[in-house]
Image (cartoon, rainbow, N blue to C red; front, side):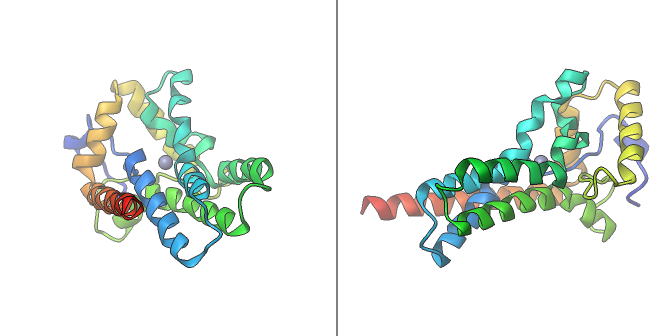
Length: 203
Ligand SMILES: [Zn+2]
């Protein structure tokens, strides 16, 4: 059941979302695959796409301002689609003369993929393929009714137990390993594509 937290998991809190290396890898693979289909994607455009794919995780230090570990950043409005629209609008205004329309489309896709992969363990849990994972992304924020329940639950847990980033990381790797495995394979694939590109350039 997705809703239950067994006693053995009490210390290891149960968020489960992709880590920055996985997001970097997924965004890079997306950018390189898009590059094959569009000549308007420059090297700087690819860096921009990868940056957009990781931009949500720049809020990692926000929870510390409120006395929580950085791993709790998914509960903050900075990790929602609404925040993504704000980030994307600001970046579009800043770089509208620098990058092609295609670059912005792929950058937007990288941002959406970030949130999808952050929520993937929960979706796997709903399908019965993972267990003990709570919703990670509140897609309809500020109208997502689940968020208040989840925040209250997280606050209770954080106050009852001294949850650290290490607990959160362990909860992810040990508690819901399928996304972590996807993350490892994505990182290996991205590293391979990066090295292959480098070698091709040096020939
Ligand atoms: Zn994230």
